[in-house]
Image (cartoon, rainbow, N blue to C red):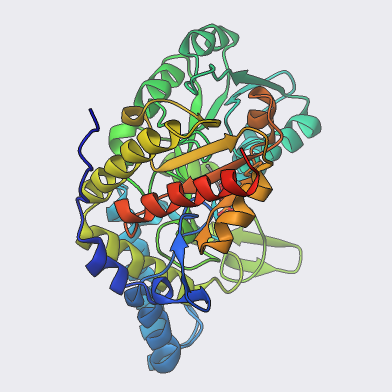
Length: 416
Ligand code: C6P
């Protein structure tokens, strides 16, 4: 018996009108179907307008000038910090550091906390499903300080093996760093459990929230996270701004990251006194308009509701798994729908992932193909690449039907 087609939780037709880009044709007569939000999300008019207004009315450097524009710009930038802090339930806004992106946030932690606190022989636990951003900074530090990297393995269904984790904890790691949601498998990891286990063994925890914070409610106090990192551009905000949340005592003890203007209290020719947090970590003129745009993005997401966004993505991923797996020759990687977010990476037997993506593009469907900056995970699954469709609050059941129709077109073209 054919199952009933699900309905969208959100009013997708209305939400799409907030995103000017979704109205465009990618070539004459071919409308865009954007299924690449894991790479970067589209921006609603509310975010675009906030940045446009900032440049038209307010533009000035912050924390420096005494004039009206400088004071207004500073207030807007600091309001954005407060908005982000409330969004993840940070105890204080001072614990929100604006960086360029998730990658820079992780490098900041590895180069400051890591360099200051880790010693030869110390163990860091990561997972096999990490994005390169949460691998390479630790590899660099491990080479520099002679550290030992260990990995929680991923099972064939795309879950972390917590028994392996339990035995690795016997090594008394100093740090456990893991992604809350995989950008390839979509797996939502049990972040609270992993964090609690790490803390019980005395380790500090860094959670990569690049794919979680945009998609479902994340509360740093409930998680008991020591560090949480994420990017503005993956949550309807602009590129060029990211966030590092840190536990206050850790941030206060950490040495500065970059040196320069705005991160100091006092400078003499041969010495300096660093500023307090968060400014200690924000050297130079920051991405002011971008931080303001991120604040507008958080307001936008909250107005729709993170629970509703998560529910919409759950309906989409449920339906996507059902439709994709019924296509002969398609393998979808990752766990069952209830344990994953809106990401479906797949391969079609006999066709390279890039060819699939190229043919889908012909139908206006934007997906990503390749290793998605998770080469070790692709090695683990013994595949060179995958095609990845990912979903966000502006995607509908109808978008998924178009994806499936287009995959059947790929099969026809390749005579499969
Ligand atoms: N993943 C993807 O297509 P940046 O590039 O710094 O904003 O984010 C890095 C990053 C870190 N962790 C996870 C889990 C991620 O998914 C990403 C970015 C994009 O999958 C771009 S490679």
